[in-house]
Amino acid sequence: MFFKRIKESFGNKISSIFGSNKELEEILEEIEETLVCSDIGIETAMEICDNLRKKSKSENKKDGEALKNMLKEELIQMVKKPEVGEKNIEFDKKCILVVGVNGVGKTTSIAKLTGMYKKE
Image (cartoon, rainbow, N blue to C red; front, side):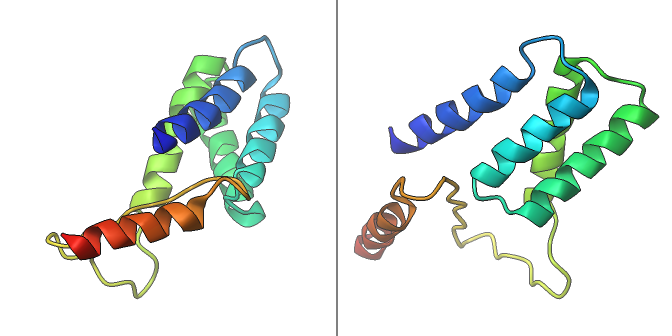
């Protein structure tokens, strides 16, 4: 239930950006603002938007749906991309990514998940 609310909240914010006829730069600015407010970080948000800007120009896609799909692909690639020197995660271990704005209970949820997995 908790994760469903976060997904819906972030998804609704992102979807609302693409809802009307806006210029590419205006959409990218709103995406960047939403990502920063979602605790992704300024550098990462700027990198994502720069990549979207380059892709949209190279593929000549400026409509909202195409940008939305490019954003989705970019976020997936950012999560999959290993850092330099990072070891691969073994398949028998669990890795959980917890995302949310300040004050929504990320730390509490992580503690509850840890307790649950320790009991198992």
